[in-house]
Image (cartoon, rainbow, N blue to C red; front, side, top):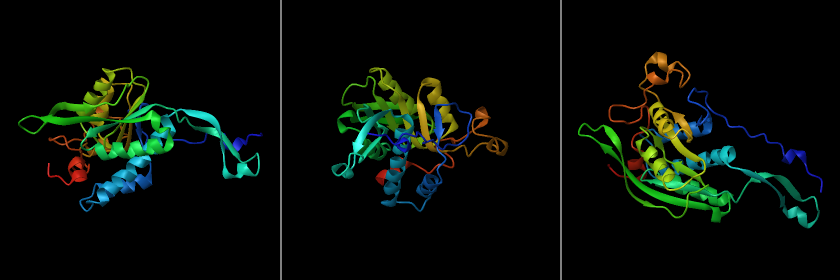
Length: 270
């Protein structure tokens, strides 16, 4: 069987925004998803359109992470034409279907994103290698409404974490308190493989907190918001004046952001 070199050329490259946050941070440069995200963040976007767009965006994020982070394995995939010719076979480096992976639902804003990623993984990999866990977390605020941390109220972890890729699909990377607690939970309960967070929007404050506490974490996002920074800071490449970048208001909401995604996904007031 003669292999076709066209099936072996590793030409996929991640398109991302230039920044100075380090090699573990990936802010995607994708006009299609940026357009959908802008609509998602507008006041006009309500149910059922809101959740439909969330699912579309997380399907795209899952594709990006699979392409850029997951191992590949050489194999021969017969096509329907193999019934009539021995050359009806594609020989290429496909995603390794046996890759063990866990996607973690950080309730409540992470429920729909994690389920969407879970479905993509099951379509692409061997479902026996794919698992979804659940963590119930909540921000802690003081009397002035400022976020002072995050609490873990409960968990449903369906198996070991050793040597598994751990995905955290959580829409808004704001302060990083909940995410750092979640990552710490998995690190204290085994030896996980790569830990990858997947967001629609992140802030400079979030990046700093997560990488300070868990420097090996890989961060993926569709958009970086630092809208409360001074004009001269906004004119700089992201991360160039990191200490001066501001993406959170006094109540730790992202600006420009899109409001409370947990409330919007569930048609809830709080």
